[in-house]
Length: 128
Image 1 (tube, helix red, strand yellow):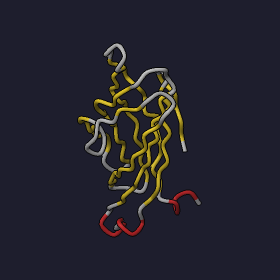
Image 2 (image 1 turned 90 degrees about the vertical axis):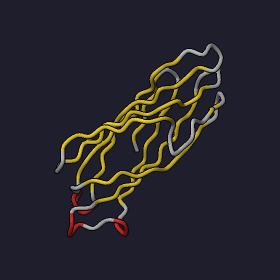
Image 3 (image 1 turned 135 degrees about the horizontal axis):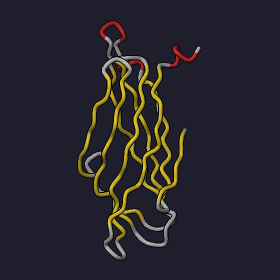
Image 4 (image 1 turned 45 degrees about the vertical axis):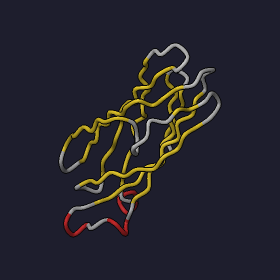
């Protein structure tokens, strides 16, 4: 697990190799990741959008941008957290992701950026 706090917002990331949904014979590797966003501020925040950088050791770099996460733009109260799980497919056994969330302070309507820490996606057999 990796964790980073930016602008009073904690981002924790856990990754899981999805062996049953992967097919190494045709270079398809699926990784799930669970993100926990904790609001350490004194005001409500809303997650507006995401911007991901995905590095695949076989296919280089790609970017993904969009509104919210998993179809939602959650509002997170002070001291509370929001958790979601998503997935990423790679063409190799090793990759990584990092990015940013655009958030809004609902008290003063100011937007701010929160950094998503870089995390690795590695097929467990590669770690031996």
